[in-house]
Image 1 (tube, rainbow, N blue to C red):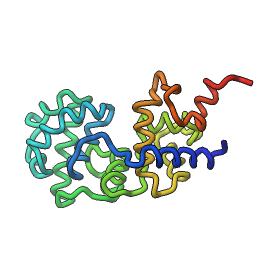
Image 2 (cartoon, helix red, strand yellow):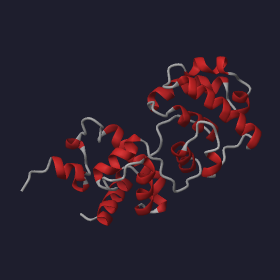
Image 3 (cartoon, rainbow, N blue to C red):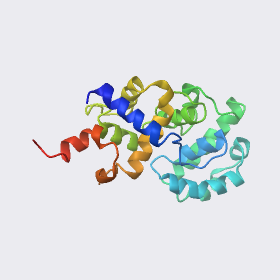
Length: 217
């Protein structure tokens, strides 16, 4: 299977079997999503979803969050990874949203990355999920799964290199969903330590499966 065929197989399968793939973070508006995504760095969506309802109730708008302080916000985030930094980032992000962006979440990637705590991955998530732009956020799942499947080369050493290869070969209209396809496949099937190859429905296209599990001729 050459690269073009591999990508087509990937797109055809998930378009049919997972046509409505979406983030598992709980949110109701762009402000809530950017808070949740910022908290999710090196933390599970499940854990983030446990703490965000209280945050959104107490700080329902960027203005409310911007008016808060470290001692007030920190208890809500205590159980999340890196709570000190994330508390500072959320406060800084809220203040910048209010002061520089009229409390609106910007759609431009460069503008998004000006916000404290918003790196390229988070900016790509917001641009993709909220604004349906053809941006590919590369987290650990996307990085691992895309390499195992053979969608990107093994010498792609950074998230940016993986991102560039994926957006080069995936048609723009599929990129927002493809991000979720790769994440969810990595979260539930193509696990980091013990991939569930016996449950995988796309092993026919998988370089990892071909190399490690197919009988050698």
